[in-house]
Image 1 (tube, helix red, strand yellow):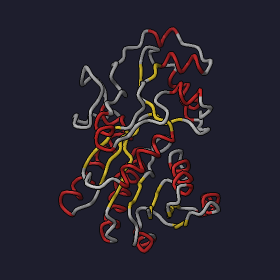
Image 2 (spheres, one colour):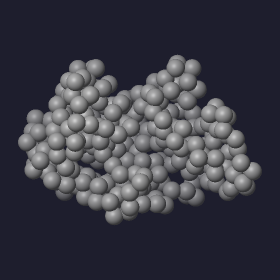
Image 3 (spheres, helix red, strand yellow):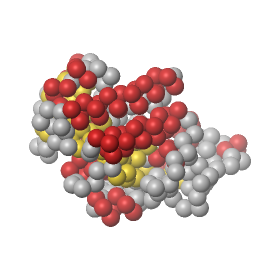
Length: 280
């Protein structure tokens, strides 16, 4: 396939692109600073220097593309205004440029944080009403809605993946997140996915026909508890955290749809299987 990928210097993109190149796909990368993607260019990727909000800088590169895989997003470390401009306006600009270039498929990476908490006595499903609690998932909900409107009104071939906590392949995500985890009730569980499985889900979304306008949860088969992760990383559980209230279904997702419709099966069904395989 001919893929056009954004967010390639981030945690997900920097692990997705090498996998695609190894499988023989042709990959174009949209980056603001070409020097930061030099290592991917050496692996065979074509680098396009540009800005999501300025489609003229990448419109020509979209032509002949089979699928856009849009991973670029602002999450932590920026203000709400910057988050909204990047995650909403940037996504819409890219989608409109893809429509103009007649790109048939547009994969959008969202988050399972869109569901919020306190809704159900079961894992979250794709048709549940989003109730995002902070700016990042709020911006993703608005971007999803805008892209689905473009699907209905102009035929954008959008496919939305709601990603969980992503780990593996040397990603320091868990270690970086430990200070926050220590404040959560140790009984809380949440869905995770290894980078290999996120890449699998992205490629299935990019290559499967007849799923335009569909939303898919991504996750492994065994949501893990805060207590387990803290113990595995030799981190103490605080007395204060034991008193924290929590929704047992917050950040836990139902993956029936992606299994049934895209035949997704996790390469690493649990964190323990990834650990035992030396893939952390």
